Image (cartoon, rainbow, N blue to C red; front, side, top):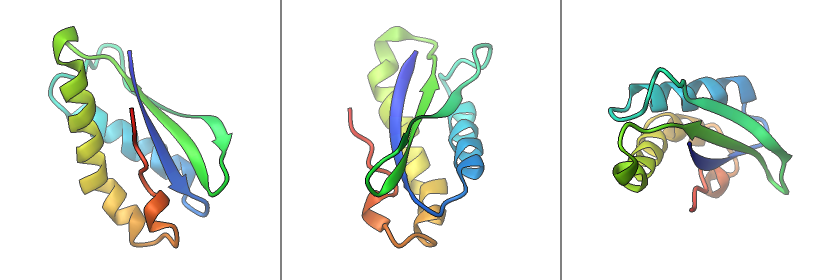
Length: 98
């Protein structure tokens, strides 16, 4: 299982974020669907953001790092961009680092 941390500004609907994160992961080739991706709010409330974590399994262990990056970029370009337009914390929307 691989994790992608995602910080989203306060005021963003957490249920919407969870649905968007899971949808991006499920649509990406190489992510296992028989072990469905999960988006959680495990770390709760940060200083200026809600701290989510997207978890998913991959088909090939040797490609996990590239796939983790690809899923992160796909979220940042699609759903994240839509969320950013409604957020006063543009720099906090998807601070994704591993």
